[in-house]
Amino acid sequence: MPQFHGEYECKLDSKGRIRMPSPLLRQLGGGGPYTFFVNRGFEKCLMIYPEKVWENTLERINELNVYRTEDRNFIRYFFRGVSDVTTDTADRILLNKGLLDYASIRKDVILFAYLDRIEMWDKKTYDEWLNREPEDFANLAEKVLGRPEAGN
Image (cartoon, rainbow, N blue to C red; front, side, top):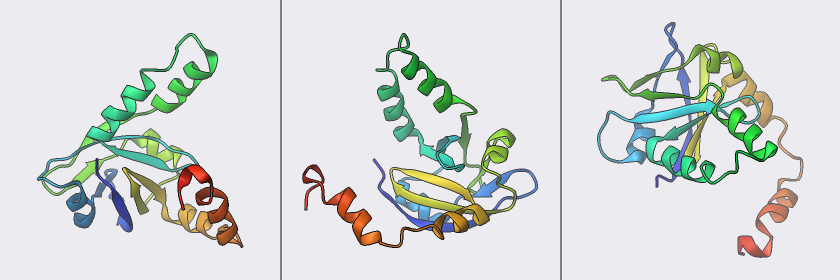
């Protein structure tokens, strides 16, 4: 599984494509073309999953019980607007207009890579979100990482 890191500024072209940054693609290893799955993320961003990560995610979703309302609703929301994209010879991916509208992405884009996924944000929205950083990040870190199951 890839372990991504980094924050990358990109531009959306008039056709709805962005060029995936070379340092980010290098973190995937191997050579292109690369296939990703894009869906609606949380906080009005898009989530980009490499193909292998998407397959693992699907395995977990397939374990849900479609006879439970909560599970069924999650599945519907999770798959709403999902699309698969493959890099072209210039390492660009073409994004679904509905997904771009959901995340209010017009031109300036931030790709925020962490763990095994990549968030795609409208730059202005991302900057506004970061400006809401908790005043006491140390307390948040203690709450999240200071739990016994998280290790020390």
